[in-house]
Length: 505
Image (cartoon, rainbow, N blue to C red; front, side, top):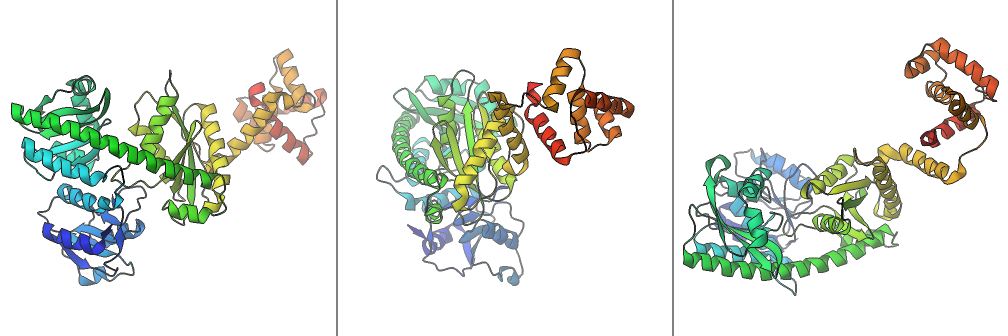
């Protein structure tokens, strides 16, 4: 377990100075995050990009952090006079964020050791060892090019490496470049190291890359920054390192699978309405603030289950990086409980997950309204109905219950109507039969008149006819059926029937 005191002592040797420490130095630190547009929760916040110490402290308060690391800058002493009990450490200008991030992540994640492996700290140490053996900066990535670890050694480091680390994975520009040069195809088919020549336009010095594989399964890859192909001895060291990385990734995956199982069981308890919902939410490290439930399904044109499993894996990914939501796979649906009352956080989460999946994958989702931990069973039902609405629409914006409750209600009525429960008699049914037999537009005219609340001109504009035409049609409709437009209850009933049977016209 890492304490605040140990973090302060270790980082002191890296040019990081403690400026303010109201918290107990024995406080345990279990997670580390960087500031992002969406909500992040973590004990240590790296305030990359903060314009002032005061801004960094505000970010840290929002993330409920214990300590914030911010670039050193001149500021009045009263900046730190704050009610937030957040320790502030300042980073000297000569210390790079990428190097500091590696140290902090390694220290914090030491506390997450498992029986099957010590977790990411081992992988960072392995990256350091490999970098010394091959003589170049090393990055270890998973099979989707997300960064898992990187070395402290910066030999031959270039802008592309810094961009990859800060983006937590290869950018789309780099992926296109590597794909065009056949790198990903090589990784899928070969265990031999491959040299990728540099490109000044992409800030790339050059790379030696090798697959980390278990049997035939590609688990990840190792990238070495170098201006020219490695000599034979270092190529052998790289190949040996790839086997060690593969073993570590297998251990980490087993550990992650166990964590997913425990997390899923707790999330399912919440979604089923656990009596001790507040306690369960606390065990999942969910805040005592409004939560939303996201129901999500994913598939490709020719396969369903693989895409769904990939979506669940991405939803529960985050070894070493903050993950605000907690997820479970139930049947053919991924459920995620996400903190935040604002719907933009939930829609942003879905968009982020969608962007992390292959383009061929279709993602459909629904988002509940805000709820407390004790209300998550109700929220799950809302998310399910929003998901069903998205499936009916087959695209467009992800439905959020706050905005889509009326569409959901009408969808329920349409389902009832399609099951044979639509009225067979009455004014709406009789007008529709007349339209079908004589080519009139009486049902559409009635709908427009009701929607315009009796305004003939507005109804005519909606239909593209003169208001006198609407008046004439209403008079003819009253001759055909008992319309009784003066009765408010009958007007309401006709509006509901027209909406529910719209697709039966």
